[in-house]
Image 1 (cartoon, rainbow, N blue to C red):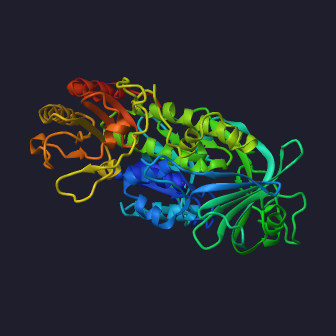
Image 2 (spheres, rainbow, N blue to C red):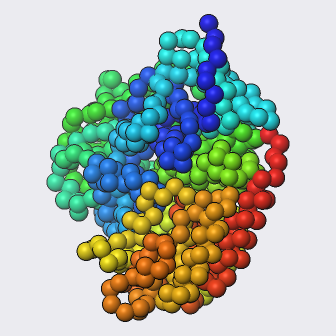
Image 3 (cartoon, rainbow, N blue to C red):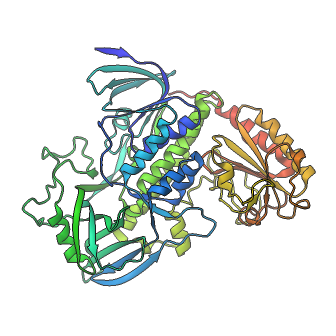
Length: 567
């Protein structure tokens, strides 16, 4: 018996890391949502394990980073062996101003922490609930759900977000193209303990390759550290003849290809046993290792595809529903989390009536080029190796850490201002240390100051208290407009005398006591900046032009974004 569900603002389909991150961002934006997943429980698989520094920054803004840090283990580098000989030792060393390093955490733990965060807002994942179909019109989306009990429910929502993976029902129903291809190789995964004398540096991953005489890869073993003594997530090619009698079944459980023809992700058939994994380790590992305590294993295939657009009308897609690619460099889940962060704050403004639906067009404009770049890069790294990319080592690591993702020239980026090398609108807003107040006995980071603020933040930098006061007043007036703003002052290292900050500013003020803000932001005299909720810069301007800049950046933006859009 079908029944009509209550109306909510947003329906999220899929409760993986991407869907849960979208729900987390929407809830902290004050937007009501429901999140459904067809599976009855979280899968106990360490599928996506890499956590990038940029993802940790986004979760820090939500107040979630501490819980992740307590559960994760660091990834400090990778040791590569070729034909039994050490070839490279790559240290994942980022500039000292980057607040977080690379980390590993099993996907089921990532999902648990995100789900606990979302539950804290009163939103529970509705397990065993499947999206059957949906239609949309100018005013909203009507979704047909099948609940865990088998009952049918019709739900009316303002927007629908598909985070339902490579075989996305949302993407297929919208009719989005998903162009790309598939790798011919089949791989197998296992979550095991390795008792060995590898003598790896702490926190290092291990990559072992066998190459033919012409240098082409023939066989590969990748071991990623997981929480727990000697525990690794191992991946390797499926050999032509699996080892044990209970060898790998490389088919789906029913022996057929996926109905949509997309071979990507974990296989539905029987996974490899310890003998299968042990055989590859015996063949490729630099020193002997005995595997034990197999938690789970699976066979998986790799495709590389991306949609032609990230949504249509009131229905949008994110994560694997929009882009799939090789797991090289742990880019997939993290790219999807950034999709969710980008979309979440925009949906928040639209749902609250502070911007019009046209704002959502910037989601595709900003994120699809990123998805295209990630798909291309991971395919290249998978086939040619990480070291064949152009550029210096520092830039390569920053790109892998997803710290170079930017939207310069995009529809929401303001006019460039400032000296060469300065962060510009569309760029990531760098973190910095050494911000002080008269009360705190310890310095703060910029992330500490931004944490918990769901909207745009205006940062006003200078040394003259009177000028900062005037700029703060202008910004406060702009904050009373259609888009919510928080206004903060950063006084230069040499501003004023003594430890006191001018109380007359009327807004929270911090001193750049270590000079780190000035070093990283390169202010050309008194300077203002606007930081978006996803940690990207929206605007940069001279302080004496604060009123005009905010009026142009936010006021005109609000008017433009209120233009009607046809689903």
